[in-house]
View 1 (cartoon, rainbow, N blue to C red):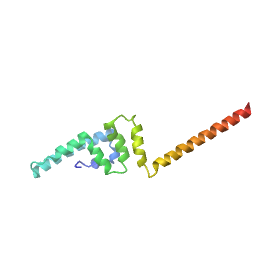
View 2 (spheres, rainbow, N blue to C red):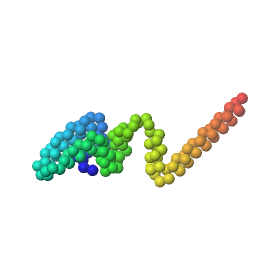
View 3 (cartoon, one colour):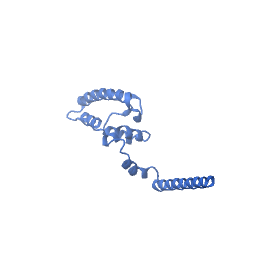
View 4 (cartoon, one colour):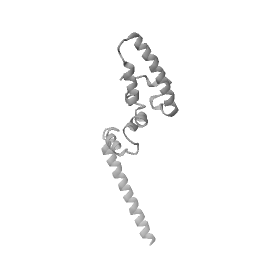
Length: 136
């Protein structure tokens, strides 16, 4: 995808939030204005700037930048991509869909840990019932 680099402000992609995003937004605009003038001077009839501005406006800048930054992928997803598709409180479907990709065998691991927790809680209940019965 054609877009300005996220490192124009010297920040990692997942650091482009709040005031750092405002700074990047301003530098992005400046970069785009200069870049479009340069492209127009050398390539007639091509409108790469329109493509790049559309990517910034529709959010695919974040998607393609995140794909190129494995360290920043999670943060970029939470900060810039997920809000385009729904409120952050609607995570149940997301968690269900994404969980199997955490690690091979993730679903089995989760089932195992939930089972261990259930057995632990049941054992605690039994211990407290026994202690309560002894105190009566």
